[in-house]
Length: 177
Image (spheres, one colour):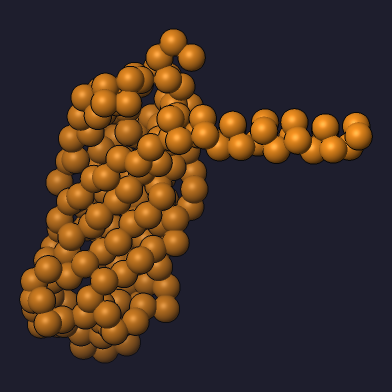
């Protein structure tokens, strides 16, 4: 009887924790675009390019109001997903890349690696492996920038316009809780 009661209490406890997580965890999307220039370089030593995104305004206070929380109640922020899509030329793919690494930076903070991709296929959309590091300080800043490091494995003659779609998962306390 005690085992049954303990099992029932444990089930109630863990299911209520999952229910609470619905109210304390939420996703915030951000997007930016950048260009990968043409690299008409012949020979063995093709370049590794470092490309910075324009600053991305977080508007985090406004976004948190919809969840009845604020920046001082944020516990952790992690990158949940990151996708790059070639928007122009639309008929091209990422086969010219060997490796891509993305970094985040904000004023007064050290740059951090947040995602990478190797074994690039012949698609025009890349889904990244994310590092899972806590990015709270970057998201509560007024703005952040992305730096994309790309290792080219074949020459290109066109500039690629690329869109980065990021989803950050925020775990915060609810006001009054």
